[in-house]
Image (cartoon, rainbow, N blue to C red; front, side):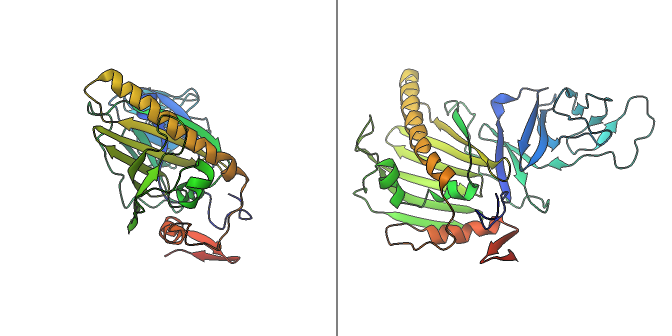
Amino acid sequence: MSRSRYPFPANPNGWFQVALSSELAPGGVKPLHYFGRELVLFRAAGGAPSVLDAYCAHQGAHLGIGGKVVGETLQCPFHHWCYDSSGQCVAIPHAKKIPAYSDVAAWPVQEKNGVIWVYHHSERKAPEWELPDYGIGTDAWAPLRTQSWRIRVHCQEIGENIVDTAHLLAVHAMPLPSNPELRVEADGPFFRVWQHMCMGNEGVLAGFEMPVHTTTCGPGLATLRVDVGPVETLSLITQTPIDDEHVEAWVNFTMKKLPDAAMTEQVSSMYQSFLNEQYIQDIPIWENKVYRHRPPLSAADGPITAWRKWYRQFYSYYEDEGALRSVP
């Protein structure tokens, strides 16, 4: 993001969604553009996903456009050089020796909860933490229901809405809940919030108050858990930088299956529609606001300062009052 709008890099350090597991069968290849870079995602014959820099080290062909999986490798469409999951060139047709400097950069990858994640670090450091595994994809959970948007905003702005309690009434017409509990906990790369939300005045959920437990897992993922009676839902709210101006954002929703399949489908559809409606209401504000580095917060605003202090760990540097500073 341009520094005139945000005093920190467009690409924080952490895990980010790049695809749904269901999008890529064994042998599948998918070109990606995130973090201002061309990338390629492929799933080897054995089933493991990998992400590499997109351009072949030989003569620069895009491995995601016409490249194909050959066993456990990705074959370049131009001269059929083959790369393994580490980005090492392991085969060149009719060549007995592989030249030096023939590798491409590989990105750390996790596949969890029905999503393929890539770890970005501006200094290419290895991951020091992992995302939680909630067991999504097992038979206990309904399939993910997903909606995505391309938004002109920074990841940090999206995540900050979780603790911006004042905007719930102003933007989403959610009245103050009768239970005022608001508890937060910073725990390394995780920021947890316990609160109650009242579901507004319209729709099937009007007036319904529920406990919501949110865990922000680095800059790329926030999980929202709602457990009311027999209904247990889990939403993966994710955002991944595309370039200096835009992110791709997803709302991935699932719930524990109920004994009645038709009821599971009905409740899933209702919750997903509600989540998407709430999310869409924020988009025009995000796309047209400026970032206030030190806003004059009131007691009604929620723990925004604590959240920003926690979030700063995901930057290798930031600008503070016009001075470039490194983050320990």
